Image (cartoon, rainbow, N blue to C red; front, top):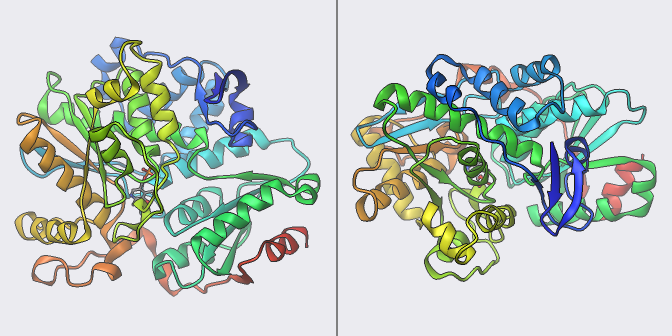
Length: 443
Ligand SMILES: *Cc1c(COP(=O)(O)O)cnc(C)c1O
């Protein structure tokens, strides 16, 4: 598998280099030079596969021999070891639950696969690999669980003190071993700035093998294709093979949606994609106006989507310009993606309504998706069969939306979480200045 940088098509690297580097030195994003199409017999027999078999077929085709079958199978089976059930709500709408992994959000798919791929490529290296991540909550938990106990890898997570939920903080601070949580006396932006500075620091670069685990790493996009195939497999069981699903994706940095488009380029039958956002509506407003304007993000209930400059938009442009030749990127993208945005009040109303009508509890991110599905059906696709990607378990955000559900309904903590909440938090407090991070990393 060969990848190029979106800033220079002639800058190509192997998957190993793209995964270990994260970002190309020219500040573009890595994209596959070829997106292979799966054989049709694969789709004819898709009903007989399980999620691990689907994941293996997709990765094997995409990687085309880069990793031998036996090792690849281990990586896939070890990382994708939880289900992604499609729950049929009614004739028009189904919810694809992506929150059955250890951190209770869909980021487990990307983080676990990336961790195993990095561990694989890092074998035989003498020097430890140090993964630096800044998190506003969700990413850190998935990355921590994903890399836990990976030989030769240390993970250092920076999170803003007092600004993540209890459950999220426990996920970051209770694992121990190769996972260290730095509790930063500052904001998420401070954390992110400190991490960026670390990658540029000459002393650190000379003495430490640093890499990043954020959502622009191509190793996180590959496994995010898996659940689109798994969703389609179950869709066919319910609706038959004639219809194609409309995938609705609650979006922030647009890694999830980009992975969906990659899946469709590999041949997955899709009717359309719907980009669902909160008031941070850079992409929906681009789709309706043709003007792409990034902004400072606003804080909302669905805070994992509070993004004012979506990092994967560059990849989406790339996918829709390389495509058909004629017309502008905007014209082509509009044909495949619809965009809708909703505010917190509307989101809470939908969470209430859904719990009353179906007894099904939506987290705020998924509720934004359900709203977008309904709106799209109303004004664009009256016969559409909508599959809303559920990106988080409702318990993750329960404290922020206390009392929102009908009749006092409450999400239950899944058993898989075990005694997480009673485990002891261990964090290192540091000030929001780079020198303290540097001292820690060198110490
Ligand atoms: C990260 C996240 C999103 C946004 O996903 P992107 O790939 O960044 O668009 C949506 N919902 C939840 C719960 C998340 O954690």
